[in-house]
Image: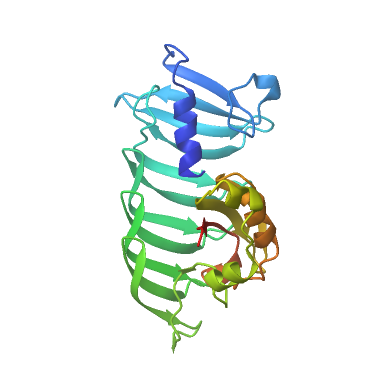
Length: 265
């Protein structure tokens, strides 16, 4: 379960009134509270002797356990203590410790539907900070990397026989093999309505760079109006592919935000 989903579960409990010692709340796929009949999953709270509430998230359809952890109070988004998330087959996919709703200490991640660790990483207040180690499916060390507040500062990579190979960071963001600024300068037209009204400023657009480097799912998150938003979307849809982002050398989808400036000469 993502941290945002964990927080939303507790936040949605605000205003529900006084809970009993044991409580079950039902949610749909959009994480909104619904009746049991229309729910996709349920969250069960049990008050423990230590004052914490154990929290289990289960599918309504078959009661499969999806995650479990601990919540400080029912009217607070603050999780603390050990947390575990499970795959559909019941295998652990992620585990670690929350402190005041932030990941802290060593967090472990596993290959799907196996007991084999994929990687582990030191977390400090929800940010990767310290040592990251990733492993091949046979358990051999693949990578050891030193991170400072999420930024790679050094590292080593190894082949399956343990020999040194060229180092690549565990996470690599997507990037274009051309200048974005030059592309925008060559292709962006100043909308006549914006020019007439002397509109200047920035449009921000969110999008996804998929596993093949294609840009998709554009959404304006900061609007300027007067035709500027539409012009940004037009140009972004035509933008050539990027080099895709990678995680442990495998291509992944990455969310990206690009600001586009309009300034009159």
